[in-house]
Each structure stands twice: as structure tokens, then as C-alpha cells.
Image (cartoon, one colour):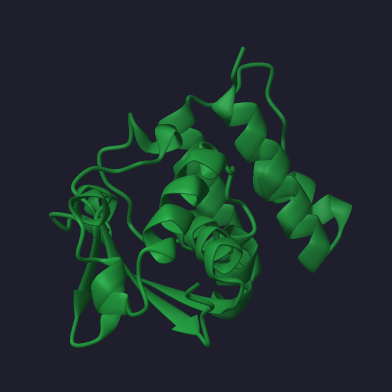
Length: 182
């Protein structure tokens, strides 16, 4: 069975460990005292992010969370982005099709954006609101991997809005550095 919580615990543990050590990773993921009764997902998300934020600076937090993307559905999304890229020579052409628009891609002033009218994260399904965007940085990591694979170039992703932070949409700016179009 697909257990998103176990997947997230594992990727968070490995991402924190890569930036520090196993003890810090264990503390961030499970807290000081591991309980026989695990926290419910919404509580775990909030408490794990609070523990992460108390141990690292903003840049390290962003790097850790970007490395926590689960990769769920990546092959299907990658195929779509590659298909859109194959039929385009510019950002404007890339975002001009109905498929691109349906996927939430758009261009404004020559810049690429990705927008969702819903929160795509299964871990946040039961979370009403987050106090910070720390958890949401995994989607920037997911998008970075997706667009780097599709365009074979370096990509920067900036989270501009988050539904779980109270915004009406999730919105990211995608910056492609010397993308390969054809």
C-alpha cells in the first residue's frame, strides 16, 4: 500500500541527515521522545516543520525541503512537459496550448509560471492552514527536478503563493537557464 507518511518521514530524514547528522534527522522527524502513538498527519507536518525551523537557517531549510519531494506522478508529468517543449521554441509557445493551460502553466512578461487551484500535496489534505511555507518547499524541489529533466538545463523555482498559507492558489515562478527547446 502507498503510505505517503512513511515516504515523507524517510525523505525528510535523509534530507536532514545530508545537511547535518542522523541524530538531528531523527529529532526533526520524530521529536525528542518517540511515542507509541504517532501523531496524526496534520499534527506531524506542523511539528516536524517547527522542529526543522528551530534547527536550521532559512536557506538550509529550503534546501532540505526541496530535497523532500516524493516524485509522485513524475513520469506522467515529465512526459507532458517534454511533449509541450517539443512543440515550442519559446516560453510563450510552450504555455500557449490548452494542455499547458490545463496543467497550470502560463507565461507573463516572458516568465514561466506554474499555478494550481488546489493543493497537490497528499500530506496536506487534512491540514487547514500552515504558519510558514516550509512544508511547501518540497513542491519547488519537485518542479525543479521536473523542468530540469524536461529542458536539460539548470532551473530555479520560487514559491510565490500557497493555498495552505491562505492564498487562493499555489503559484511558482520557474526560471529556465539556457533551456534546450528541440
